[in-house]
Length: 322
Length: 261
Image (cartoon, rainbow over the protein chains, first blue to last red):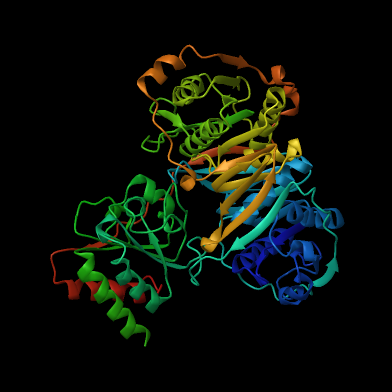
């Protein structure tokens, strides 16, 4: 089948999750001729070379000054231009804020099938089948496209390993994104405060719960995070108590994360929190309450006071990584 | 101004999800349905907008089964003016594209000026329908909205994306907005509100009533079955030893067994 991968960039940097999508896309397409990528933005023509060896012979570039800031109209029109040029069976991307914006738009525009946030995927006919967690991760659904001419599919970040195909010459092929109607204008994109990877992309996360007591105490998590290169998260209880900001919240009304290691400090483990982190590959729980539900999903647990445990963890990680 | 709020019934987070014996469906018996939590922020934003403008109508609408009626009435108890349920009888397997087609019909039939919905439903976490409906209407949309401020027919809207970044947009109405948690604090229904809600106008319609041909609603994305997530092997929990010893054990396991550090 022919697969087009939407390769996301922000601020001129190709996102690491795009490599996960290219890896999956190459497997589905079966050959570099059947895999193409599309880049949308200002200056993206210069980025196409970075995709050499990632499986696609063709990289469509919708490169225009109008696209310097992300805008749903311009970006979906850019991807649409590549679809018209390549006629793929499947358009593949990542369940990121951008992917979750562009893919439903285009599926509606082209009357296509849409599947989002898949955690496994394989080719089936001219579409795909796979799995996705539902109901806060309480069950896994077997899903499939069914009889659509074109399918729009996103994968969950951090689930599929990325590995370079070592083929695909990534020839840049310009396409033109149709201009938007001006009914939505991007005024600005304000930078986040943190230089760390976003929670949804982080491979290591250390999170604090209500037991942190106040926002200053998050410093002990920050110290540990600095040593191992982790991103800091929080439970809803910690956010609602004002100890942490909402963009740090992991769980049902926050973010769904998928790191290799999730360290939960002073988090009891409500259903809502676990909905956001239970698929982490390794979970470490630190809690004074030996009956806390978080220990039920933990790979390793320490029944103890986080204010004693975390500084010792930091020390030992430091020694280990020296 | 006609303000339409789209809501969906979702199982209460606390509900146990039990699969049927053949794994084809979810047992309905134990499930208590609630208004999808993000949709409560959408209702609140619709009510706030009407209050700010001093006039207008807030219609609470859903596409779903009979049980959704009770939840629409809850929205009316919060302050909505009128309820609209489009019955999904015979269309229970509708995919998000089909649902968006039906709701697009409802938005057109209602001649809505602005539509609020939740950024996603907590059952399938798809984040599709509001965005798809906007596309079918030729309208702009912003999803994951954390701030909404209408000035005339232009809304200044903020949306949260990865890394704590915030995208700021000017959007010309009509448009669809998907509410995120930090947009507002939903009000509770007052006792008089609850009493009044039962007497408020409520329409039950079919997709055909809002101009949608059911034969165009065949699902293109299907759920073939469900399974439970794989059981995690029981973890190693340390207790009752000196903290230094426990930490050392865990760090060693992270390095040698889990190989994540």
